[in-house]
Length: 108
Image 1 (cartoon, rainbow, N blue to C red):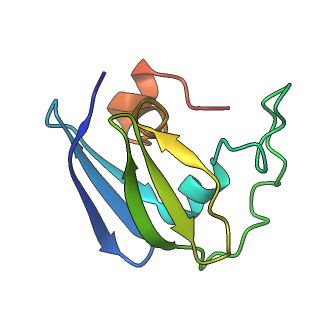
Image 2 (image 1 turned 180 degrees about the horizontal axis):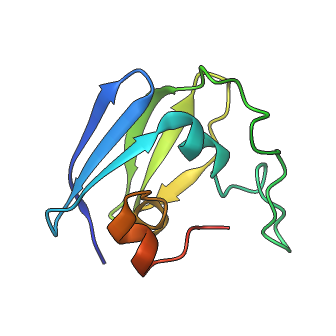
């Protein structure tokens, strides 16, 4: 499993992760928030998103980012959301660079 070497807040709306294979992923924070996989954000049976894309405020951003064991990150968002855990596997799948998009399908 790939793991982050560094996690950096690039600016208020951008998060960067350098992975242990030297790849750098850059994430728009609204995109990450829209792709939370917790039970409040996804139907537990179908996996369908409960919030429509574009329904979150554009100014949504992380207040805190903490490690969860050796497998993920817990992000507390300024919109009050705090229940999601972003596994490293899911974060890598969410990378929007052209090389990652051609290798791994995005999280639905």
